Image 1 (cartoon, each protein chain N blue to C red):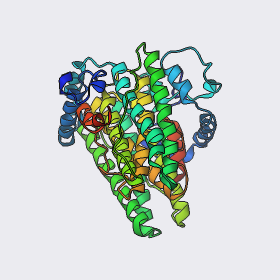
Image 2 (tube, rainbow over the protein chains, first blue to last red; image 1 turned 30 degrees about the horizontal axis):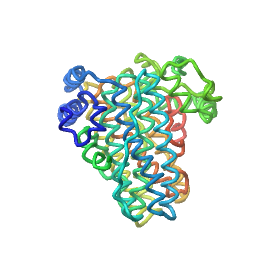
Image 3 (cartoon, rainbow over the protein chains, first blue to last red; image 1 turned 135 degrees about the vertical axis):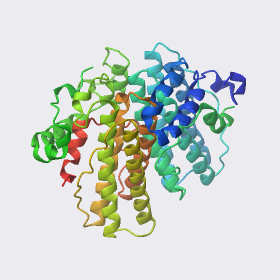
Length: 209
Length: 238
């Protein structure tokens, strides 16, 4: 994927080299693995990822952009919309947790010698509690798929541990929001689907000004 | 960063269930580790993880447990289910067997009806789908799936069951998180992650049911290593 394919230049700036292609190949390989067993696809997948170039800082910066977006959504948009009850409680709590993810990712990027991307400006199409929750559900579920999709491309075990720790919390948020909306807490049943970068951008890109 | 795993003596793979049933040392170790884990700080963990020698940002860094994910790939000795990805897959399979049996018993006991009842039934069938996927992965990789353990679960009252389910799912999520960094194959890692976040969704759902936090560890979920998890499930092995 080249940068001009991307819906949003802000996110394109932290392109995860090859993650889209890698994730695509991986999903194909996993589908094959379901039939032939993982051993059959192991070498193929490793080879595919060896060609991608990787870049943990790039992956972390992509994640950071999503966390900026989520934190802003809960803390800024949540106040504008005027939430009440459980929705208000979740927005306050989850907003703090997303902000903690932002801080941790910024620190991790610096520790790896990288530069954290700047926080973009966001625009959220939510005007009521119900449209706020609906968008929260999209963002959280997309977040889960984004981390799950990028994680196999991570080189450092430390970064992988951090991503795993965060994605579990995103999944918990996603389930809680879905329940509040009367939706299934497990929208894709027993297995969460990893998302490609392109799929993540399709969901999150339009929210960046 | 050191880990606890080096201290583990590896029991015989075939006798893991008996080993757990007999060995009270495991239980004591779990309680000890659970105590120290309470003071864990993710900030310290990230800084330590990234090679910083500074611990000034957190007073609790010295008590933070070394996550299993920091262990070098050669920690297979700590896994009684065998080495490498196959050992991890069989460990996961054993936990999924127990979760499946637990939900089956809960559904059979008929303690829940309506929306909660159907959610628990759904979770049970999702655990069963994890069992099926893990068995296929193990067989496909040339391994032999671990035997299904016999579970024993108290299913007499709805509130007790709901609380136990919350505990079990949180443990399951922590168990997967604890292995993420030890998995060698990217395909196995992707599969484990796709199951891991579903366990987290289950745990959060049950949290709403028992009026406990949907995120009991706060913003950063904590991993659990194999000895910790096995000690915790020991009371449920029949």
